[in-house]
Image (cartoon, rainbow, N blue to C red; front, top):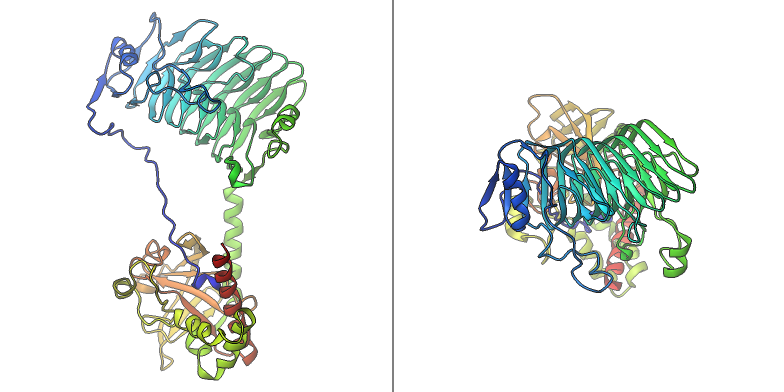
Length: 551
């Protein structure tokens, strides 16, 4: 019940993957020829858009953007120097680039784009590409740093890696060779990846990825590795510290590994992060990823979607915690979870069956003052109990909501009251299976509709429950019901919202339902239920306040 006082606003910044507008002040340059595409390597900060298909047959290609470390520290060795990396933008505009060829055994950060940083590149097809190199090698983007690589369709790709002193960690992929703090979104790759003995981190879409997520990516083709290799996967070689792999599929893939190879998976060779946020590598969540007709020919390793959580004895000995334990990852199915949510939502309607009065006018009646005092005294002591009890009562005994409450309380940072009454002429609510009805003070029916579960919903990202909807056309402000998972058997009350705008119903200090969350208690309650709900309300909220003060 502490939810009524512990709501917080959660703001999210979303990265748009729509059309490129270009950096502020930059004119967008249209590229229509092979010469103009090659000239992008001479101006790495401009914004470009393709205006035609381009054939690179016979062109000796220089990757657009090169990798050079930005400094001498260990961290700076992974950050590209801004003067050599491509930092403009590139929108392929749906066109096709054909017949890219890059040869040579000593290439670092090799691909159509060699190294990109803090940018977005995508929206094109790359057809019949063949790229060779030593480390961070791909047909499309050799090294992506803090960037979004999106909507690239690689058809007939090939990546060939060569061994050198630098190639132990390798990082080879069809779309992205190496990714650091990036996103790979809506990309598909049909490619063959070939790596020699003693190399690592090879996959058909992405190679060696750190803190880099993949969303809506598909792979088909082959990964062929020599002896003593690790990190081999159908979609990516690795995903260390990736936040998510969502809706990624490896289909018609063959992974062939030589002797002493390990960390091999249908989707990725190894992945995961650590549960302690301070380590900066989030637990990786694999959602709706699948392997279809994937064959793994190997001497050692795993055949699951994920080969392993990252762990290496030498790293563990050298660095200690958290590297002395395998990284953590979770594999989930949204379809299974949706079925589970639907069952839980249906059960909730059954569990709240009954007729309800508004909670707070009942439990704040003078006859229950002593129960409030005793409950508060257990936490704050006898002397402070009267003041604290009145504060708790007042917090949920508001009588205004919506714009009137917004005008009075603003964002609530300087104090606010929640209106917890039933609104729109409703004095009692009746739950009877899938039918929800409202009665006025005279017992006349205000509304009565059958409701079906829609989806999970939360208020301000904190109060999680279930959204229901009626198909009745005349429902008006009773079209949707939102129920928190509170029942008479568990919390002695229920909490809910109803209205006509489900988006507005997710806000707590904005919109037509601002500062309103109805709370009800059974009309046929006994005195023990009243005492229990007061004790619960005081105990939870005062414990929450004590935790905040301690922090």
